[in-house]
Image (cartoon, rainbow over all chains, first blue to last red; front, side, top):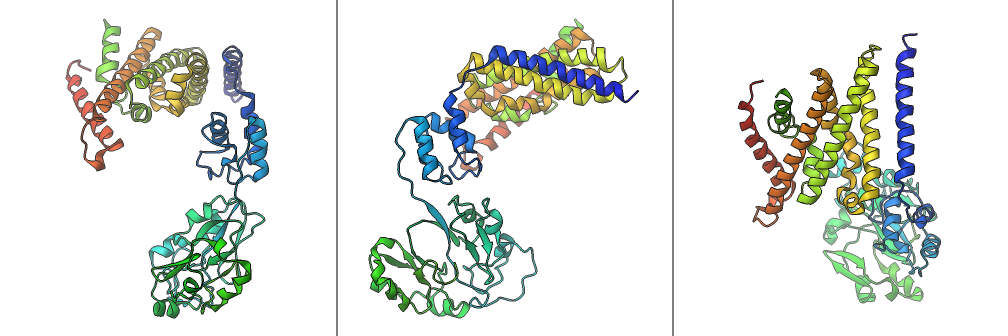
Length: 267
Length: 192
């Protein structure tokens, strides 16, 4: 009996306030734009924040007020953009799909180890202590990026490098933020050539610490001066469209195969 | 006379923000513009007074007769949450610009500890109905006074040449501390 009194008291109290609030809501209801709910429903509801707004609801409000364009959601496909544009009654701009790419080929066999690392099995603490490989730019393989991925689009491969599943990758960029060594980067889906290395070590050093490192020899820059540049002994693809498919095989001249076609070896 | 003393004491001496250090979140969050901070103060005062009244009623007519004092915190939270919802609806209906200006801090009144603090303090000190109302109004006015003071200083600070590391929140905290120190001077005025 003594237990029932507090339960009853709180229930009555809660009910009273609920009724009061409902009545007040009826009286003070503000008509909101019916498109808001529709736009919010069209968004993926992943609340990943890749658009720069706190969540899908906030983006929907921004789209409605004209601060954001219908194609602002990097996660949603072109269909989402078109659907929202349809709700809003405007034309959707073309959206280029982006995928996260792994800029390292320092597999467990290629990258030379640097003693035994016994700390937390995560990339950030390991990076603070210099990592587990001699290369200070390469993947340490603890999978911060995989854990950061909200779409289960990544996994650690058997060779110690993360793998991105294009079918699931939405290009939200969480893995890019998660990696302490900036190995992940977003590239538009049609880019097929990449430099799979982040090492700015000089050639001899880079070659010593990893078999697959870019050693800055400059062969690719010589062959494709408009497409590739060299900075700090690291090649970088600046305009992949300048490498025609029929000349793609020339990239095989790279002595460490650090530059090449995506999907060639282990990504 | 007693009530007047209680009012002055709640505004100046036992100021909720500057003496008890309750409700610091909106105190720093909405004190960039005098207008918005004044509205925030009014909204908090409204919620404070209503909460004081309703929680007094609940305390005296429900909790104490049934010996349920241990439910104070839970039931007061219920009161505060409902009242804030009410205020939010009201502000949204009557003044959308104010709703925009207060932003997230309006629903955050719910978790403003000064309101919970007021309800608990009033029951702890066993205030009567009238005393509770005056205490609520006084606490709200004190909050409004403090936040408007800080906003006035911060508006001036916008134009001042502040060393880079102190810009924004750090200088606001320092100013808040100095205002609190100044208010400490009131504490000798009334004997406890």
